[in-house]
Length: 177
Image (cartoon, rainbow, N blue to C red; front, side, top):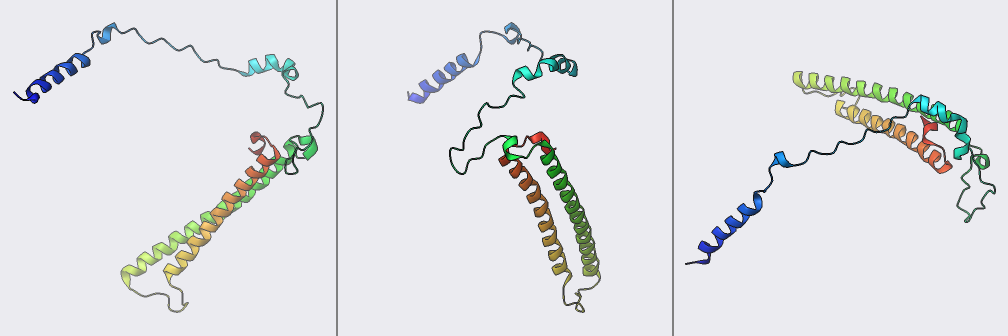
């Protein structure tokens, strides 16, 4: 007899024993329910508003720390002079700039769609390019797409610049919303 005739049945029997559980799913204990999560309401906030300053929310250091290295900045608004009002104005200015750039991008998208539609129509009827202007329709589309990419990049850079400056200055994220 070969070892296969002994090993295979032995392996099958061993795997069958290990695969079958002695307990049935009906005997498993039910999962424990999770305790409900605490929900805080405005009433809770109103209740603790009177003791708000006792939590340290408005505390300031007794001594302003010196800069350990020339590149480090002190993390206090009073020293920097850029508080919440400043960053809210900066965020509003940036939002307006991004909105104008978004309008430009939408106009460029419409022009690209128009040019592609005209290219499709003219390619079906004839195979001529605009020889009078010296610029093919494909070149105009490529130019418009490059302008669109530049406008989208400027909008993204404006938002990233604001977030980076605010982060370095210690502005709270809520001030930028």
